[in-house]
Image 1 (tube, rainbow, N blue to C red):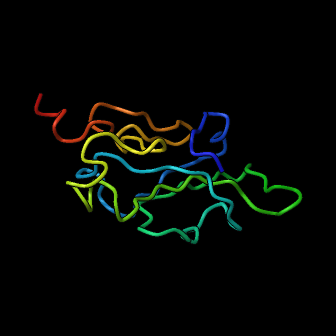
Image 2: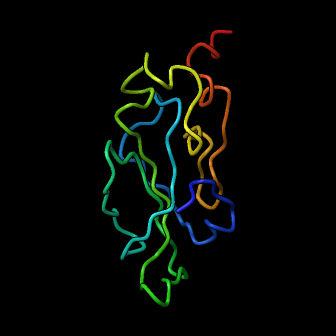
Length: 124
């Protein structure tokens, strides 16, 4: 699913659950995943690690064909800046990256100077 999200993609979100402290993270990746349940920890089937996920409200409806719910998941891959600060994302960030400080239920995260340019931008 596309990771370029709009508020209309997120209208059924009730809360965001962070699995780790995001204070030290410049960015997290976000994507919509299809899951069987709306309010438990979703399965994680990517490389790297899940950092957080959205809980859906009781009015969220599953897809009539698949029976699955669309939920936002936040994750980081092994080559992201937090694990490899001198790597490919030393400057810049992946397209689906957002600053975790800007994430809220029903609102897509935002790109910030910190998320897009890395620690060097913070000292400028």
